[in-house]
Image (cartoon, rainbow, N blue to C red; front, top):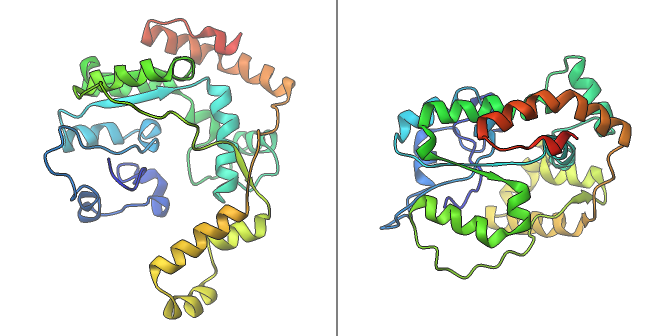
Length: 257
């Protein structure tokens, strides 16, 4: 797997926020591959892109696509906090962010409601790659029996499933202790970069930045979603979930019941 987990190369809608922008840089992510049976990366941005599937098919016609789907309400709520800590969300609350989207604000990534149009997104990949090349995981199953779902993925990829793996939680909910410091570490101003860069190596800056970010991070459960907002989203997303259930031939309507 690419050391850079999410290059976002095939998601041009992200613009300058893509981590990788050129073909040489993208291919360089896999230069350490030797005789491995599979090579891959894990950019979740490709699911919501209206062009990624086509370009991926042109790039690698026999590619195997893995899609994990989760209750769209939980996805939206969780995504708000991910964007918040990544400096991609300036609204003070999830509810305010939903309202801002509804009023047509421009965002770096997809608006929350557009991000969870799973039926349309899955249909696109099934149409372009065919069902035999697309493996769908429902997060509920993954959470309930992680090892079993993992083995199915390995079988889908045609690689050895006889492996011992630790399934500890490595990316729990988090927030910044100090938002100003977090933004400073994530996007230091130009004048500060001009002072620091000539005096330090990239490795030292990365190490120091990671250490300071760790000290400035609090891991804790995210705030509970307002029941009224949840009820509104359940009603709003019910048709989408019914459509997804039909696409996957699996009843997922409990997500909006």
